[in-house]
Amino acid sequence: MASLKTTVAGIALDCCIYNASGPRTGTVNALVKIGESRSGAVLSKSATLLCQDGNPLPRYKEFPLGDACPGSINSEGLPNQGIDYYISEEVVSAIGSLAKHYFVSLSGLSLADNLEMLSRAMKVQGIAAIELNLACPNIPGKPTMAYDFEQMDAVLQAVTTHPSFGSKPLGVKLAPYFDVPHFQRAASILNKYPIKYVVCTNTIGNALVVDAENEQALIKPKAGFGGLGGAYVKPIALANVRQFSQLLREDIDVVGVGGVASGTDAFELILCGAKAVQVGTKHWSEGASCFNRISEELSVLMTKKGYKSIEEFRGKLKENF
Ligand code: DOR
Image 1 (tube, helix red, strand yellow):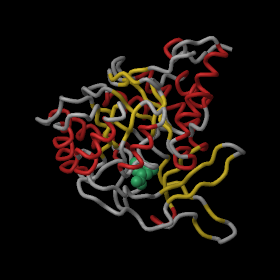
Image 2: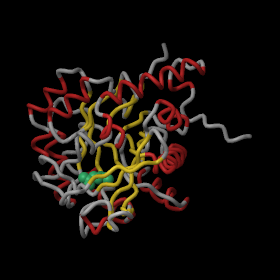
Image 3: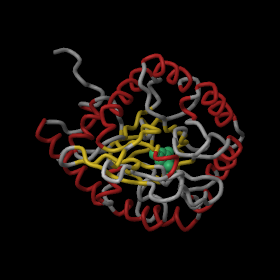
Image 4: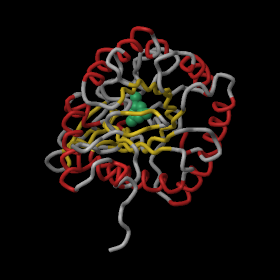
């Protein structure tokens, strides 16, 4: 049988498929369900310093694209229990008892909040790595940090020189980019800092989906503008994974996320260079069993193609026709 083993930031994972931060990641029960599935790791909801309710409902909707995979739009606004919950003994030991690596996502509302959360999380045993989310598009009045290159540079400088930095690998979750100079600029900033992985990509921010029957936006917050995910974003995720795997230092791993609903979707992201693949929208609609199904489908596809490990085809997208 084909092996789905991989490493992210030097951390060995039995399976290269795991959850994206966001859907079904807010509580210990949800995180344990992920840990009990075939998911290769468990990643928390992006935490803020304090617990918050997020934006008003309705703030998440799915809408169709073809038969199998939905698209999604959300403006959750980071509803979460606060950092102290995600790094608590209760949560860390529940995931540890399932023998899964636990990754904690941080999305502070300010640099000071990010530094405070980082210093708390870095101290906790049983957390394998920290994923700094620089790409939440849904906080009213706040820009997407990964689109402001000067701010991104300053944040990474502050985070990686903070006294608490260094005991755990740091990953950065990026916004989707659409222009070659932007890929190059982002990569040149990321390459300056001792980060270990990037995640490509967060949702496409500030999309608008219209419900024609009711003549209104599909979701309520931010006048209907929200992050587009699911099947609509897969080509964007593929492009971002491909670009960053070619532009980043060799020791920075690229994790792909965006529109993965099947083993073939995961295969495509790995072909573009991803060392692991996260699942967001499909986890929301299908639940944690999606990790078993997608892993199985990837394994069957690899066997059919004669691949025994993901390294045999990772990054080897053919460019000649
Ligand atoms: O689309 C997103 N929704 N991306 C994030 O980073 C956060 C999330 C939310 O809570 O709004």
